[in-house]
Amino acid sequence: MNTPPAPQKIPTKTKTTIALFNYGGGMRGLIPAHIMSKIEDATGLRMSEMVDIFAGPSTGSILNAAMTLRHPDEPSQPKYRARHMVRFYEREGERIFPPDSFREFRGLIHDFNNRTMKLNQLNNLFRHGHYDPTHLAAALRALYGDAKLRDSLSSLIIPTYNIDSGHITAVREVNETGNSPVHTQNNVTDQGGHAVWLKNIRSGVLKNSNKGETPDVRLFDAVMASAAAPTYFPCHPFTTRYQGQEEDTHYSGIDGCIFDNPCISYMGAIRQHVPDDSRLLMIVLGTGYTNKSIKKEDWNRYGALGVVDPANDLPLINILFNASESALMDAFETEMGQNLFVFNKSLFSLDRSVAPSTQIDDASPETLKRLRFFVEALMEEKKDRFDEVCHLLVTNRDRRVEEHREKIRKTRAKRFFSFFSGKDDMVAYEDRSTPV
Figure 1 (cartoon, helix red, strand yellow):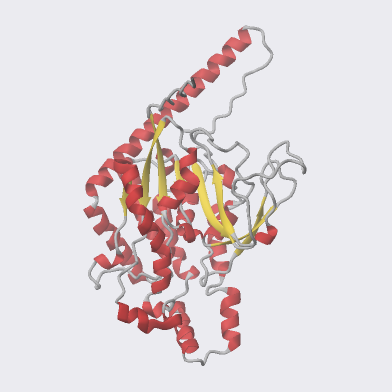
Figure 2: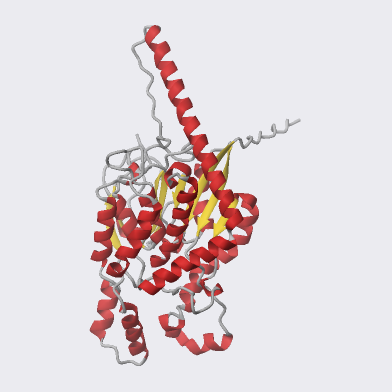
């Protein structure tokens, strides 16, 4: 008679892990920047003091990398507050996205529809992207300097999409040789591209991973690759090296907005790093929903090129970006329950006289003013949830401080007993939690 297996013990959720997801959306990154600034004003604390895991693509990665960047003179403190990032967008916006350039792009598309575009115009557009990336690169270099991904104060996850599998090499773990079996997880099975999660996991247990997983990559390169939106910027090539590998890994990264979905980030990069005894709270800061219904007559009228024409508000692109989230969000909200806090709404929910532009490259002063108004309207609707989030964030910060102090007390006690017992081996201690 076979003995049935003993039931697995479900761990009690005695701790809390807070993850913050910032959406992509170009200049509309001002929305989460304003929201985080309001959180910091309300709590008196920095975001990196309160949040365990920062995740998000494109403009979200710009914000997350800045919020977790160490101050050069005080390495235990972040260099920037959220209000600094509000100024960053307001100051650098029109340098990265020069005025009226998008209207020129619309003209090119319309010329193409009328079969009057010259081939060299089209070739230049496809080869070099819409905007000169040197302006974005200069702004990000000034923002991050020579910082590496591994230097982040809190856990940081930056997604990008590698389009060139020709540079991909097989993953090799520590102590493996060329004769070791090939891994069966996350192998590239064809010549297409694949998702790349550039991660520095500092909090909790490094579940389903090892401490050597953080790649040796500049923060600048990781963010540039995540922000390389197709038709706006060319892909960003860069190299990185993983611990245990003898050679660099080459990537050709394009916009991480392909993963501009908190459900995907949760399943693909966050959940496996949450300790079993911890409940996950997830805060989602949006950049405004841009998807809207389309009449069948309009869709059929657009034709093959019209469905990707900016003059029609890029209907197919909006569908592609929103379809996966609409398919997953209901189930995700059910699974997370009261542990999910979403601060987002449709850009079409406001009167047209005050609604901000849906274009991610509109950095005009009028759009900046309307984005601020959009945030005020959103915060008015979500006031109770905002207050709850602020309370949870402060509580999480207090928990982190106490855990850090407890680790220090235990380490000192071990060293004390080791010294008086006559042992020469001192206790090695590595604290990967955020210093407070």
